[in-house]
Amino acid sequence: MDWKTASSYYEARLSEALNVQRYAVNLANLPQAEIPSQLKAILLQEAEPARRQLERLKKREFRIAVVGLEKAGKSTFINAWLECDLLPAKGGRYTFTTTQIYSVENDTQ
Picture 1 (cartoon, helix red, strand yellow):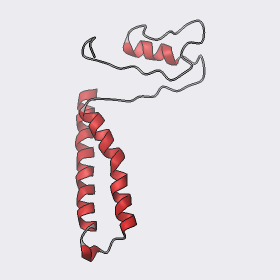
Picture 2 (picture 1 turned 90 degrees about the vertical axis):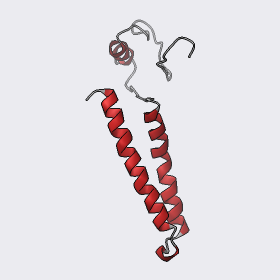
Picture 3 (picture 1 turned 45 degrees about the horizontal axis):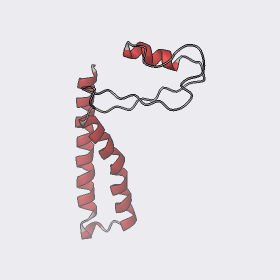
Picture 4 (picture 1 turned 180 degrees about the vertical axis):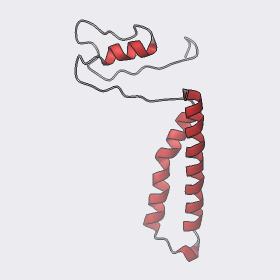
């Protein structure tokens, strides 16, 4: 499955899950449901990470962590994946901190 198909699939599934959550909140707010306010707060709180992820999917923004021991080949892996020599991959210790890479449409971004 290519990334566009996968991101569309997960966007749809996450939207459905948030709709179910919205219905659950509406039901919990009915007086006859007698749901404690603490549980309602948890239900609302648990939806926030899903909403943030849905926004990232809509923007086609992906976060990928490449983690490993020093000199294990992380930069070499990323360079091979991106098909360019973006990160230093030989010699000394260069990428010992977090490195963020952004893909943009044009150079002004």
